[in-house]
Length: 94
Image (tube, rainbow, N blue to C red; front, top):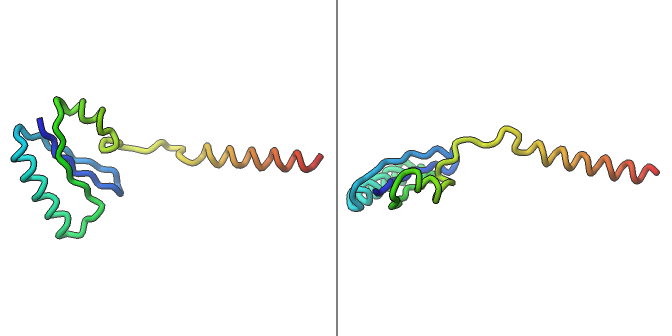
């Protein structure tokens, strides 16, 4: 099977359409690229992949299928910096 992927690099939203033959997938890809280019949607990425199944494609090209980010993406780093700062302060206080 052939899969047409439309991926928005900004929002991380991905649309996937399945095709039985490469010619149809490639034609649709070119049309989508023209559409996004003419409407100045430069964050869009349009590609065609061949895979045995959608699950295989999701495994090999997982970056296209990330739907959400972890809730505390920066909290752990801020906590670590805070603890290091506290340790330096306490060591200097002695």
